Length: 188
Image (tube, rainbow, N blue to C red):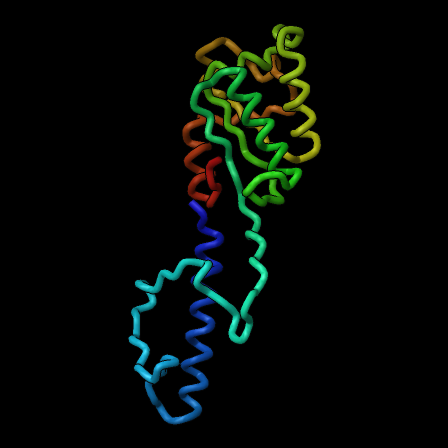
């Protein structure tokens, strides 16, 4: 889901259409003609969907590709394992370093709502030191924003005091994932 790029594309096309209409309105109303002198068909705005690689600036033969606009991202946690969490954190670090297809300046949201939360228990720190330290470092440098499900914690007799302070508790992990999705966060 790349709503930011889609919105930018639609706004650019809308602007070009308005420019064409305003130039045409100043002259006499004539149909817009293609290079072969055939009339260009009018397409309703809601049906206009051109791929980005078909759009070129007028008079520019080899325009450089545009940088992808920054996105807001959230990691999709599915397996709830230490290995999955390590992989998601490593990918977030790659994105922050610009070594990935995504581009973001906001921290990447990770909503933990399963057994992976137990990794962060203070009593489990020695067994999970490397992973917890990685998460803490990425959180400290605003690469990720880690949230944990308070409901899961309650069902598993954990309190916020059992976890490091960089983890933010949210009432229900599933609702937080949906809220982020509604706010335009794309999954990776």
